[in-house]
Length: 166
Image (cartoon, rainbow, N blue to C red; front, side, top):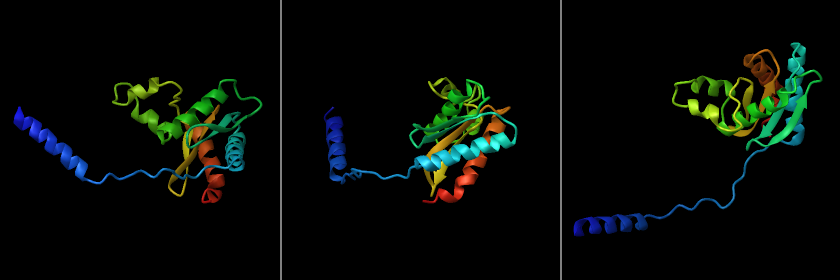
């Protein structure tokens, strides 16, 4: 018992002897401007329109908070919440919803994420990065399938790519 107490005390002294690295009290990060978020949403919507799809597009910031939502005239009522959910899911999990779909199939280790409140694990949600940092995400809903939704989201990101290095 005495040996265990001495060993514990020694471990505490060793831990206290090492300097503690303080975290920075403030942090900085990049963020999409409202104008750039709107440009992204418009470009994604425009690409879907050119393919003959009526969709909704949502753009969220790096934390998953909605910045812009656009819904085409004949897009279904469900598309707004689905697009917003895809964008939120991509931003908060920091990956595309197509990738999340692949790694969370029933029976897989990460299958439980499908049951988390607010997650929409259907293709069409993509992260937006600038200079290696996550700045937001875009979600598209209403095209015939997640792959088509994702193609429109990708086209939107490609349309603003030159403005992302701000």
